[in-house]
Length: 258
Image (cartoon, rainbow, N blue to C red):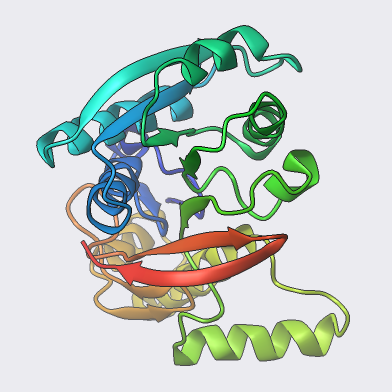
């Protein structure tokens, strides 16, 4: 069995019936951010920056666009960029002329942060939205330009539950001067604890029996929320947290249920 903490591309678990994940999938977070843009930010138009080198960026952009259109919005600009680049001025200049209400930037922390920083320097004041690829690390590259922007992620300490509190307690006991500011920490914690739980329930080291125990998981309480699996090995009803950057601080906005 394979149990991934962070692979959010929907196709991953479809490769075989021994593959599971503890994170939500990109189709869900694309819809979450599209609905947030329409309902909470009252955005009528959107532009999308797409990393031409990454399946993650392309797929998440596609899901956001579909959901935004379904919610009654209009996507009136899309532009590609190369993730390894450090200068995005041509793409940014085209985006600036679009006059959209929000930009969706589904990239990882480095390219998204650098593009966001250059966008602000070029005078774009429009709100940017992102996905879980941003993470806390985007601040290292955006250098403050992320202020006022939002992104979706899998967990925040203010989205309180008992297992989350237990994780924070044990983590701070072991690392007293460190913060849990990387989403891979609670997701990996949940993956390891869930794997251990399945092995205990199967009372076996046989791969097939452990796989069956994983598939039968029902309402496992994780730090990132309760986990039960559908037939594809994806968690059912996994919630998403929406975070706002205020300066260099991440502020919890709300949880969104499927």
